Every structure is written in structure tokens, then in C-alpha cells.
Length: 106
Image (tube, rainbow, N blue to C red; front, side, top):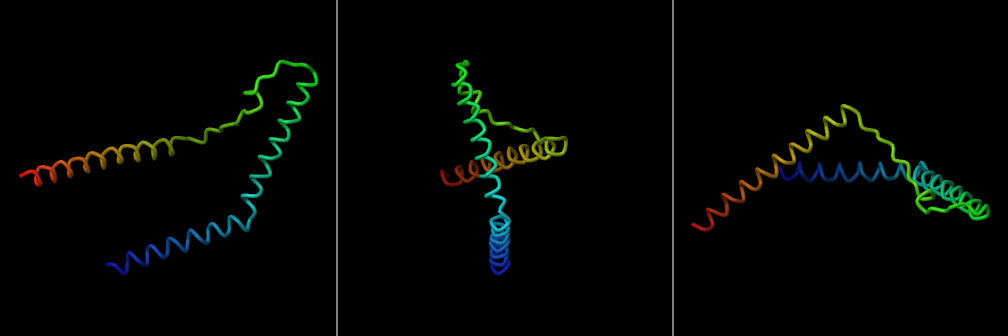
């Protein structure tokens, strides 16, 4: 039993390492940082133009982040299952500790 758990932990660590290695080598992180820099530079230019034209300036206009909602029926279902199982596990843990507490007090 202990060997199985140890092997599982080692396999998970190796998989995480390989995945992070491929992400770093593929340049995905650098690409996302470059995209954020481009967006930031565009907003700086937009801000400078607005100052130059004496327009009304609101900082919220330049700091907008687009949030795309990727949820669908499947993700909503999975979220609900996860949320309900979390509540069930929490109740079970509270029940176990309550029973342990009564055993210790007696």
C-alpha cells in the first residue's frame, strides 16, 4: 500500500514537471506577457492622446480587463456537483469530529 502511494506521488510530480517544462519551452508564458505588454502600451498611447486633446479622463477606462464567460451547461453542472459534494464532505467531517468530541468527553 505504501509503495503504491509513493509511486503515485512520484508519477504526479514527474507529470507536473513535464507539463511545466513544455509550457516554458513552448513560450506560452512569454507570449501571454507580450500580449499584456502590447495591450498596456496601447492604453498608454490612448491615455496620452486623451490628455493631449483635453478630454475627460477616467482611470477606469484605461484599466478595463475583458472577462470572457466560458461557462456552459457542462461546466455549470460540474460546478454544482463539486459544490454539493464539498458541502456533503464538510457535513461528514463535522459529524465525525462531533462524535469524536463526545467520545473524548466521556
